[in-house]
Length: 169
Image 1 (tube, helix red, strand yellow):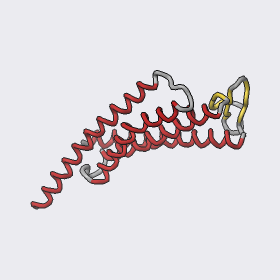
Image 2 (tube, one colour):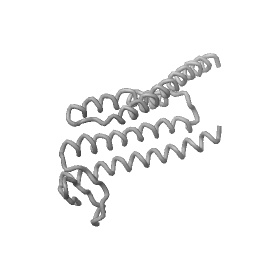
Image 3 (cartoon, one colour):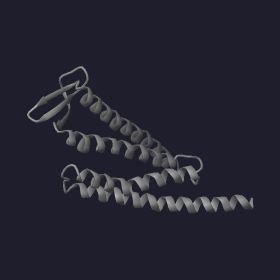
Image 4 (cartoon, helix red, strand yellow):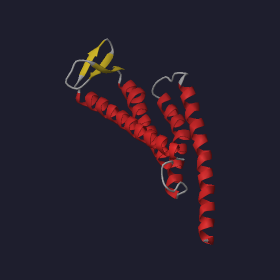
């Protein structure tokens, strides 16, 4: 059990860090785009540079729809994904596994992964063409969501058994 606690803590911090990097990247891109700073525009491309340099950080198409629907929404969605994933890893290093809060973390993760990618793709498809490869990502998120749904059901059963055991002691 100690191995799983160590691994889940490492993955928890890695996921939190990754989430933060996605959100910071999205915020920096949004701030640069809105304030028109740290931008180089050339050949129908918008290049967002690293702060205080001329070195390219992000290379985007110069269309508002592209920036919003192919950059900002996916970047912030993956920030959310890694934040929720970190909460799933957090579940596995708690002293008491079967709690309502842990089940809530699992439930949030599977609901977001089952529904959000499909809903965002449908929404974005109204504004720009969708690449075929995106369907593989939707399937991957769906499978992750279903897997965590099963874990959530196991945790719910464990909580019920734990509560029954507490009644008899």
